[in-house]
Length: 290
Image (cartoon, rainbow, N blue to C red; front, side):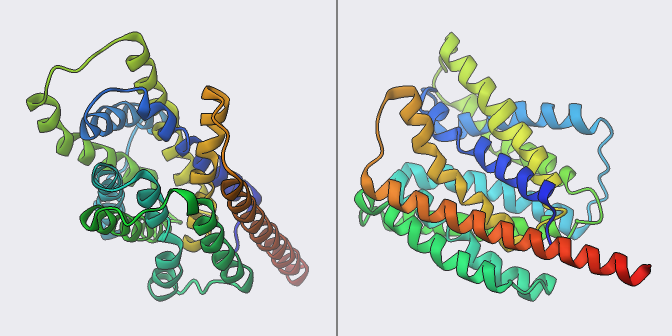
């Protein structure tokens, strides 16, 4: 199934909102799991307000998508604590590689030529983007980051399995799982600060960066393949420095500019080609029916 323009735009906007995380998480002086738990709690309320009457059928794709997304969020937080931030995000965004093969074998969605080409350029662009900030890091942290890439790819596949249903309930379940896992860390940890900046940052993280982003991904995945959703999500790490630049004036280096440009061009070109194919297929179908 080819992607529609609206689906592509929904996932791109989702990636844009996800990219706010790096900036606002830094403004919250809490343990990572506590941040993840409160963020998911707020996000779940946003999703409930949007869905109103969730339909939980507890099918394998619904539960598997929830577990894999919850695992992605928790593994990424843990990776950030045990390796460098650059290593964590780069290794997590090995996800398109896994999604290409998982989607192929589990959904029979064979990546198109433009998606294979885009994948190569995205991987290369990501390597250039983080070239100055990569380090050997911690083996455990790097392993957790790779694991988060695998679970992120599985998440896209299991969400895609629900393209004819209602995948948004998987997002709601995922956030509840994160809340349950994080609750002991919140209760047993030190007293958490609740200043205006902290509360405002948590509100942005819960409402926009996670809540509305979850809705957009659930809507977008209905019209894009698993690999394309991961390619579009690759916009997230290259947008992080944009928000840092606007907020602090910290300018990205030349490698970041080059790598980010490569990723942006590759993802945009791939999406444009795929959307055009969808229009041609739709037009051909209309002609055949006529």
